[in-house]
Length: 622
Image 1 (cartoon, rainbow, N blue to C red):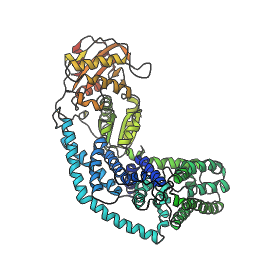
Image 2: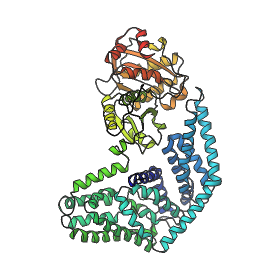
Image 3: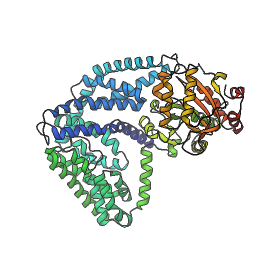
Image 4: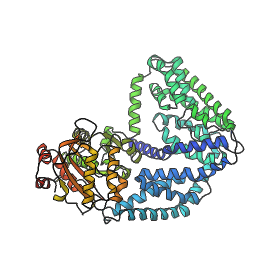
């Protein structure tokens, strides 16, 4: 394995560990506040009654949150539920806080239910999906909880005991400061969150459960070294670095954004020595005073640090920050004064930082485009908008001769191994929660041909073209393909608002026996999330993903509005073709793929908008 591949795997692993902890930092801080303020008898304001919250939170709440998040990262909400059930097994089967156990079994639960769903994909009869989904998650969760209780939990307890012995040895032998030799350079490579939340936070939580504080919370988050470096630039730096370092110091020390000082180190790489010395001094000072924090300080601001500092550690923590800043300042001053015109330009260093940061997060560098194998176009319910977009992109991918899978899914079902996720700009942040390691592309129009063409060009620059004999359709996971009939087509309609259009289309779905009447309200609710207008005069209203149990059988109605009805945000976003969708699985994709195939032909779209003959629509879409 090459060094670059090994580094990427380490970054991805560290990022995954970090992503299990970071969404729950608020819960950790809440627990830290309660511990620091109310712990009896050593809190700032000890209260034996309120202190009863401390034990259950650290034993049950926090591990369950980590286990749920780990499962969710693998397989969305469904993976999160099974991950939480599995985590309960390691919690009950041990007498220590099970954070390391949760980080193991949470993703295991998500992976197990994901693999099960792959096996049964397309094999469930319509109407039985909810029954199978609920029972499968319950049974698999139960089995994994038992496995965790009898096997994984005891193993983690023994491993934690061994780890605790090693950590205690390092503390007693005053070797813990040596961790700065690894931590400080790793931070410059943007592994700071992975180290802090993926390694030190779980270790710190285990230690804080026993001693109500931990040194591990401040090893990476100490703002002292960064402050000392920037103060040295203020005094002895040159040019833009000198003039900008004051503002950077305020942002770093009070805002907790440590990344802001990374370019200043890259301008003069020898300064990493000063950072290591400062970090070692801070850790040594903490061990000298036997000080620590009651919870992770996130972000690493002096305000956040002091907020979670127990009363008995206040002097030690403040001394650690000051000592590390002073040592870093002195060492940086010596190195800066002994440097003669070897500093890089600050702008160049910041550009290097941006590149390094994008690579550490797996963004769309040319290297990553070369590894793209799976693209998913996602929307809220995975029925219409994303299916249309996937159809358009899939056609362009196949026409270009690229061996890349293109599918559509609901955001909640995004898998962890997807390379690129394309979704509406209003849904991108939500999609990142389910597929944090993917590259995310935002759009405002799922039929944005220009965006798809640009993506295909980027892929062509790094992929080998293969011969594709026939166009590959968007994946259909069932053989029960829906067939559009004359009774599903309604031509020459008129309406003033899109709400009228949606109610009319929803009522036709009800009359055709496809949905329950409640589905209409779900269609209106879905429209309020983001517009279902796709562009090119087409809208595809449908219900929310929660409304699938109101679908009796998969169905589509085609409604034609020759005069157009305002659907989107722009003045020209008028829908003349409205396809209302009610889908249990993917039986409707046959019709969607037919429509997307017609999008390249303006005459066909025009015919669908203007025709007064139902047979014309059937000949194109049926």
